Length: 267
Image 1 (cartoon, rainbow, N blue to C red):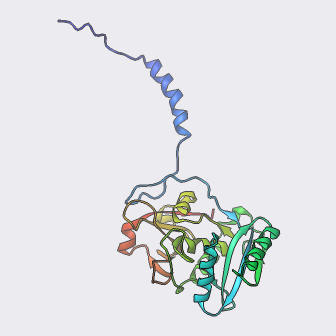
Image 2 (image 1 turned 135 degrees about the horizontal axis):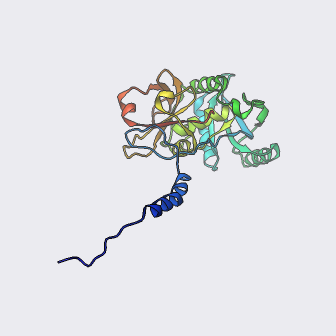
Image 3 (image 1 turned 30 degrees about the horizontal axis):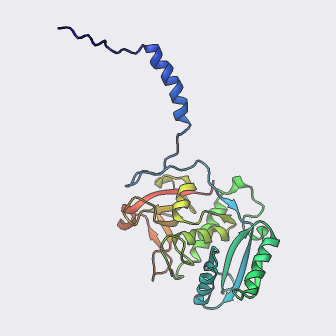
């Protein structure tokens, strides 16, 4: 018995017409994919959201790092992104904030001074940073990369205190990245997830000094740790509570199994 159901046939010209309409719309959603690690990839933007530092506030001159840590914790209790660092004078100092003008930075510093949170202060100006006067296109030059690595090395041996790789400690893993970049005049996102999300993806084999390397230490495929690449397969990072900031190797089994991608803010 013959079926009375008509066969559905779509004319070739109609297929072409449909594809011509849909494909351009799909193309605009194309994203750049970073290194394909164990957990796949996350979409990145094609341009980094790195900005030059404005005016920040520097306080303290401590001979003991514990005192700098205590002040940093107090400032973070005020909702400020603060960090301590080893100054070239041999003392430990603290910096915080990123203000659009010297007046705004001074008002904030004076407010904290009146509250007794800080005593004396110094306003760090945009012209005080190593990259002052350089064009944005020069960020990828080896001078700024070497500067970032040199700065990161000054943190080696300093204690990792509170929290994990989220906001909550004077120098957690993403806080270390923020501190190193800010000391060189560049303001990057605060958390490791944001740092991964907004940088330009870099393949593992194309890493350069100053790039950032990311890991999923929780095993759930999410970024939970970040380090600063220093060349020759090594990176500097804040490893965990009770430990000190140190160098490590990407080829070490623990990190090679948890490596999830890399990005740069230096192009």
